[in-house]
Image 1 (tube, rainbow, N blue to C red):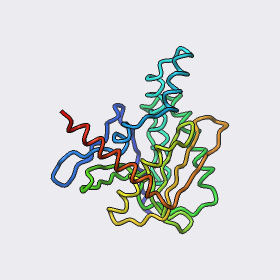
Image 2 (cartoon, helix red, strand yellow):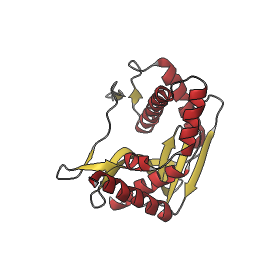
Image 3 (cartoon, helix red, strand yellow):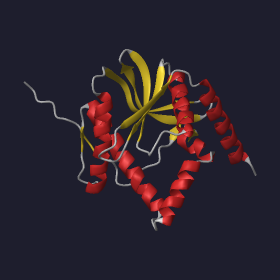
Image 4 (tube, helix red, strand yellow):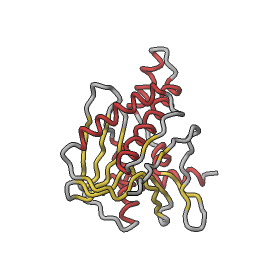
Length: 221
């Protein structure tokens, strides 16, 4: 019997900002970039706390982002049956990211999961934006959008983001019964936190308003 070699995935050392383009090559706005126009009180409080402790919050935030990237990659490899090449990654970050994956496994336990899209880039050419879907698939017989977070909690602006993602799926002919934010903590003693919404109409209206404001700011002279 022929042996099928497992795909090895490597995270680029220099993280590339995802660029979304329409069919004519026009660059579109990214969902997370659009939402940067919103005030984030919890983030500002965290900056203050880090500063009080003598820690550079921007350096700390970059490290946390790296951990989130690794955690997403580990989950993607798990779902696709791939293997993550960890040779170019900081061992400490890998170790923390693996805590996130343990939390993910706790959430996954006992569920019937049929992945349909994993880390999939999608665009809406009419509204002019794009985004990357963490996981879309059939979860216990419901068609669900799952967005993974490695933050300290689940915040309002996250729902505006996933509402934007839901629209991307629907514009690309995917049915979405439910959206879920799954927060998988970095601490080895932390568990997962999960919240779901069936209806995200209000959150999507807020996202569209953010998108329109972002566009106007770009056009402002």
